[in-house]
Amino acid sequence: MPRVVRCGLIQASNVKPPEAGLPAIKKAMLDKHRKLIEQAARQKVKILCLQELFYGPYFCAEQETRWYELTERVPEGPTVSEMQKLARKHKMAIVVPIYEEDQPGVYYNTAAMIDVDGRYLGKYRKTHIPHCKPGFWEKFYFRPGNLGYPVFETAFAKVGIYICYDRHFPEGARALGLNGAEIVFNPSATVAGLSEYLWKLEQPAHAVANGYFVGAINRVGWEKPWKIGEFYGQSYFCDPRGKIIAEGPRDEDAVVVADLNLDMIEEVRSVWQFYRDRRPDAYAPLVQP
Image (tube, rainbow, N blue to C red):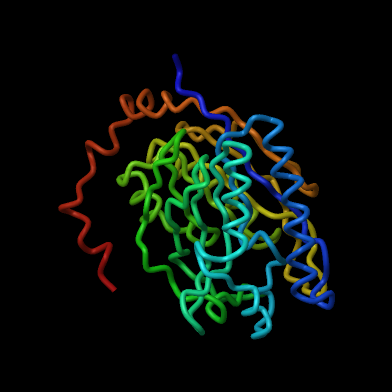
């Protein structure tokens, strides 16, 4: 029988403005996501990924130390603990993007991987950290990731994670493939006018070059008071041939669902022998400063 896994992506707008206070913002976003996770469960999703920094706005639009209060330990913090309970309840593996405190003053943009039985499998820390206009001041908030490119063996598939700005770098996308990823999730926060022309170009290219499925997620809406642009949604899945097989709306909350036939990976790699024909002996200049 074909090895088919139903996967889901959640894209969502922010609920409350900064003046509501961080506890209220976090509670509102967690309440919203509980409902969306329930919706995914009703659709029998087996692997689900949430958007980047899912329990708040994209606060990197400004440089203010107050947002440090959104950090949590991973996996000991309350959000990962709650997601473990939801994973057990729904028998669903969940990718949980979170603002991580490693130690006081040392913070990462992180995603925890929870398996269907609620086990914490590990985490990925965003490797490439932008710091650029029109309001992506991430080096103020995050250290570059230091855990490499782990692949997590869930009950249903081998999952890799790449976060937002990482997607512009093919090296890590290849590393995830070499490490055995069958599905790579990329939770993001990206706006129209900056990256939209790349949104459906880069990640299908990663899927083709590496012979795996990609789940790309973007939040939706305008987040006031900042004016960095509209988060344009359009979360999607693409297959190892680079074909988009499911896509979310531009401006609405959504659970994007697709059935991924993992047998396609071997089929595609039998035709396109990119792993066989690699020349790592010739790539030394790629890792020079």
